[in-house]
Image 1 (cartoon, rainbow, N blue to C red):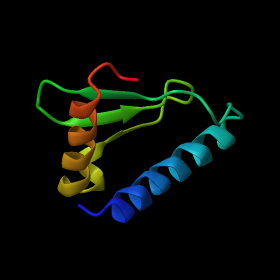
Image 2 (cartoon, rainbow, N blue to C red; image 1 turned 180 degrees about the vertical axis):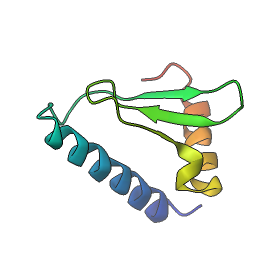
Image 3 (cartoon, rainbow, N blue to C red; image 1 turned 30 degrees about the horizontal axis):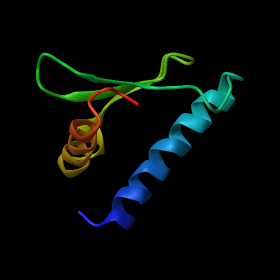
Image 4 (spheres, helix red, strand yellow; image 1 turned 60 degrees about the horizontal axis):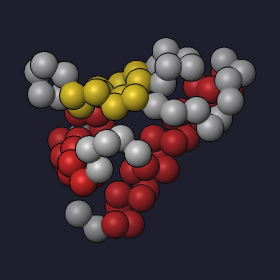
Length: 77
């Protein structure tokens, strides 16, 4: 997957988070939680707003790319 495409995907995800945080008047720089569910699917949750999404909703290729990034940094830093 080309890096420019992955960067664009992260920018879209960031805009969604920024919009939700602005709506609830929450700081824009909070952490998110990425979870691997028992069903093997990844989800992302913003604890400050309660917003969450199944990453498969962004497409199977995006979910795989995100899983690959997580595998490179399993400590969550």
